[in-house]
Each structure stands twice: as structure tokens, then as C-alpha cells.
Length: 168
Image (cartoon, rainbow, N blue to C red; front, side):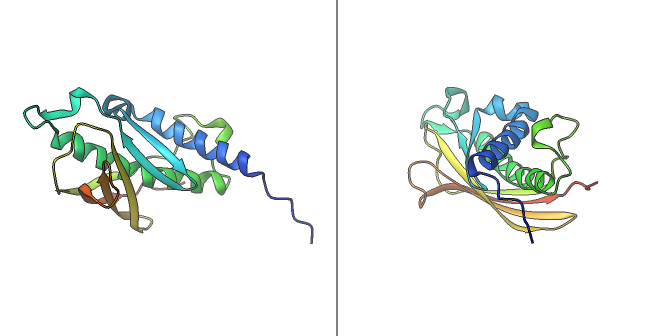
């Protein structure tokens, strides 16, 4: 049996980076907050780049709770969206070379989102990683953790439930 040789790793990496960039470009709110993403394999780390406009209490100073919640929700939705898009690309339903707003799959919709503020967010960059607990055809559950200097010392975490887009 003759199988085609596997694709070189750098081609797969480029395809994943293009897919992630297409999702980020599609959502202007990500740019407004100053969020970027670091992708290693299929794992995304969201980075909330510090900006003075994110400060809620200038006397502490501390990050605004709304900015933190938005950051966590964006991280969760992008994790789900990236996996949906990657699945579409790998199954040949979407071409990574021709990504456009028309070819991108729809994003999950938030059903509910609960944030636990564990400590004040300091005036510096913040990082978040989302873990999909359950993802089915109609529903997904995601847990997100955020930290700043030490991954073991979380300053916020959240759990969200999402309505998955219909495929096809």
C-alpha cells in the first residue's frame, strides 16, 4: 500500500498560524483589548498586553474586572473557535490557503460565563489558557485560568458554557 509522505512540520505550522490569524482578524474586539495569542502545537495561550486603559482602580492600581472577564471569555471562545476551524481544515471542508470571512466557520455563542476573581490583577501583562471540558455537536464547556508572573498563582479563573455553531 502506497501512502503519500507526511507533510513537513513547517507547512503544518504555517497553516495553523494562518488559521489563528484569520480568527483573530475576524474579531476587532481582540485588537481593542490588546490581546494576542501564542500558539504551541494545538495549545493557545492568550496574552493581555498591559495598557493603562485597562486599569479599573488607579489607587491600587488594578486591572478592571470587566477587562479581566472579557479577556477570559475571548480566550475560551478562541480556543473553541480554533479547534473548530482546525477540524474543518484537516477534514478538507475549508482550505487554509483561502481563508476569508465567508469561509471561516461561525464562532460559538456564550450561554453563561462565571468568573472567579482570586486576587487583584496587577498592572502588567496577563496570560490565560483555556481547557475544553466537553465539546459536543450542540454544547461546549470550557474552563479558563489566568495568571501574570507565576502560572501556579492564578489571579482569575472562569467557567463558560457555549452553544456550538451548526456545521455544514
